[in-house]
Length: 495
Image (cartoon, rainbow, N blue to C red; front, side, top):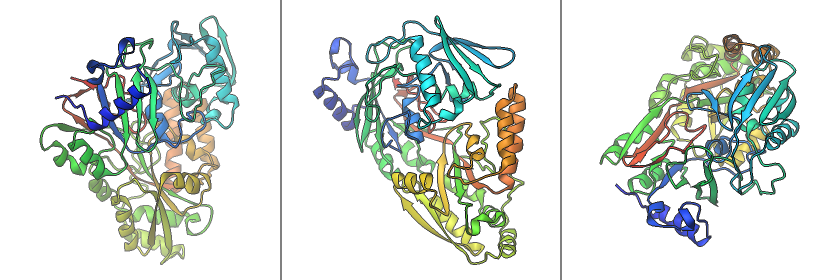
């Protein structure tokens, strides 16, 4: 069926009024182009669009792969594949990486991609401390171009370099570009950032000059609808075609008339209950361990309706994963004993949680912790407030956030991160994993470090989330794996 919805129609009217005609050949906005518009519900809208300096998964989710690209990319299943480089090679000593840059690539403003752009982009990212993930390129001592070949030289082997180049550190920008990155973008991907209606939606239009296979849809509209019930209502009203972050408890309702199907996929989403360990009761490992053992993780996963339990910092899709359920089994009696030993009976703590998360999680935490004598007050805040108070200022007791990034163990080796965790042994093991010359060695070292983090009760990992996506029956190519981290819409289209 055709899903020409009021939301999409309004977006098309706005596009036409602004003279933005990249969706259709020869500058037309005919019905054929309109018929290939797909509306996607997302939860978290970015505060601005500066992929260089603004933290948060909301930017990675839509901009990387779709608008911005690097020399290499990653599939949802975490495989590293060619992007702006057609191929690459690594020297036997692991110190030299050579990438063959594709020819005939242009930026969205029509400028040609040159080897000099790549060298400038990677060098600038490495040398600009304010740019997100700049430190991941710190070990790269030389970035040069030899014709179309881009050569990276390292001081020592880095098992994570290719992976890091699939993220923000590897994004290629145009040297000397004057684009306002706060509100606009100029990349090499299959989609042009066409419009941002702040507080409502972001619209992509397919890029006619794209070097690779063209996008299946002429237009994709990302509609930001934080509230779960509102998202369901929008789907049932025909206002969105794909609903990410869908609550599986509403599956029967959205599938009732056959217009939608709910698809479950794996993810690296980590429902992380962070502990501020700088002072107070949570500075005591026994109190943190007690909280972990007071929480019924199986019941929580059942209440959420999807996903699986996770008892350590590495999810099952990432290297170094190990089942660590033995470290903190559900045992309220043991939790009470730990609190008594720590002299922490009857304590009160505050949970700071972004307001767009379901109330199920804080309700269960309040109930479980009350059973062992801990009073938990819940402070629900908007996401900018969470970023300022928790992420930046570390002003919190407990905090819950779904960390979607894959292979992000480095946060546990960084005492300055908002987790406030500091263990030199973990930091050393992570450094050894980075310097490993084989994937197997790196994974083994990460597993050792992850067990220590869990035994230290550095946090509690409430669950490893599933990607839950509701897809309309006339939509094809909808991603279903790791969609909170990256949502590549190149193949998203209509039947």
